[in-house]
Amino acid sequence: MPLADLGDVTLNYSDRGTGAPLLLAHGLGMDLSVWNALLPLLPAGLRVISYDLRGHGGSSLPEGPCSMGAMVRDAERLLDHLKIRDALVLGLGLGGMAALGLAVKRLDQIRAMVLSGSAAKLGTPGIWQARADTAAAGGMDAIAAATLKRWFAPKAQAGAAAETARQMLLAARPEGYAAACGAIAGTDFYTPASGLRLPALGICGTEDRATPPDLVRETVELIPGADMRLIRRAGHLPCLEQPQEFAALLTGFLNATGHIDGLGVPPKLI
Image 1 (cartoon, rainbow, N blue to C red):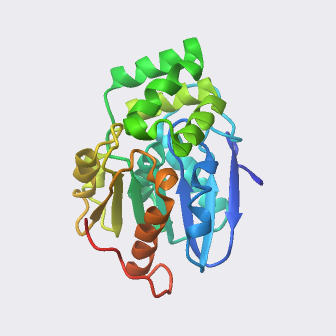
Image 2: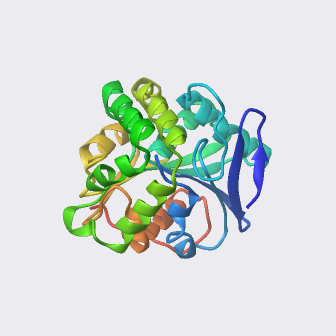
């Protein structure tokens, strides 16, 4: 995969297809492979760019504290590097927070947004400091079990999607995870998000214990005209657990916003 040298950081990314740009930003402790089950289900007419956030996957981690502003700037500079404007940005968890920040900062780059299991503010600084300390002291082995319990319903924790997530978590760098925890801890986008005016969709699994539906809905409702959809029997990673339903919701939004030309019909509101 290509690397984008953006000065203080180098981002590993994938750039596939031609057409309307779709930028995918993964969640905490993940990497761009979290979208693998979704990619073959996306409609034609898209240029799909996915990337590893700083400190994750094949991307570098600059020295010093990590801020959400830096993660937003990474997405901004990657799109500038690729000469992309008017993208639809899909962000999962941490990636959704970066998408919110990008929408506030650069509406020339982002014309529509999908937040999957994400919100304007997540948890408390104490929670994120504790998780960062756990990762620093015990590695990702010390993080994985508790994380999977938040991400997946009890019956799903022995399934293939949970195992895929577990392997990604174990492969993650503890220092990258800890740095991102610090970025989340310092982020509160409630006020700037309330000023956004762009097409937006929230997607959440009904069994998500990390970012429950009411938390996601609270952020989505800050944006006039935004929509909220639930995926039943899915947890924090519906793109892994139920990629076909996730793809149907995303395709419906792509068509409804005019981002692609197609015959897809937006799914009924749940």
